[in-house]
Length: 93
Image 1 (tube, rainbow, N blue to C red):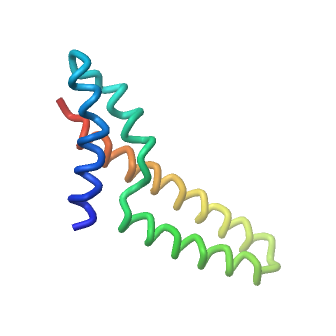
Image 2: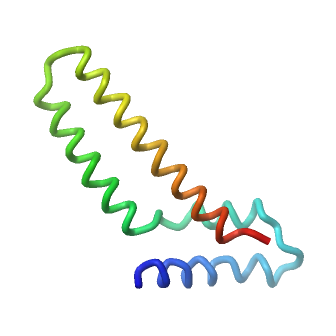
């Protein structure tokens, strides 16, 4: 249900692009990126980030802190990748 709502919001956001002339993928991707990420994935991401931050606050070992920082970077990259995949799917010609 939430995916349908997000798709409808994105479709309405993209309607200005299609009404103004030929389809421009760059503009579609830009507008899609302005909208918040997929709600289900964002909730999962927020939970994982909270867990990592809690572990980091309790950890004192430099190696473990470095590993946790790398995990945090991986999660951020994953969120960006999922958002890009989602927008690419919507903005296909």
